[in-house]
Length: 168
Image (cartoon, rainbow, N blue to C red; front, side):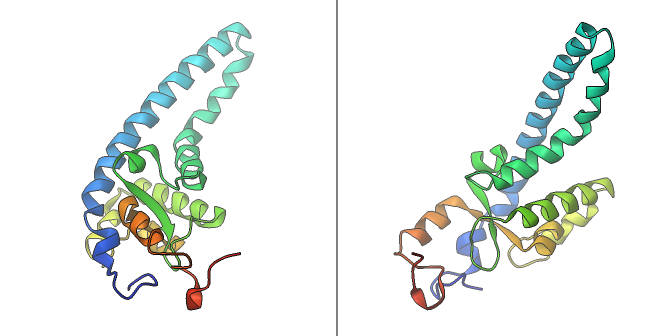
């Protein structure tokens, strides 16, 4: 697939993505652990200050990783901090636009479902042409290199619009 430009192949956008995704995942996991740890201490202090009434707020801790990934995909860079650090971004497969809210939700839900079932389904990325994981395939997303995206956008207006028309 050439993503709207006949001179660009899959390797241009997705070359080296597998290793970068693994490094990004380790970095993101570390950040999530730090976030949960800091939030846990804040909630413990809140619980002590409210004489135990605030300990119920601890129930938000399991949702921190989900919120981290979901909000990162909906952010301006469409990438988690780990993906940003490794030069990756998440895009819609059809037109390389930023993910929609529904796509981000589906991607994150299926990612965590995959992790909950041992994570073995992540090996799907080894067998797909663009190194897309199961959650990428189902949600219609693809992880590409930011540098390649910049090259595409510098080729002129309307690179991803049908017939070469640019958006108003």
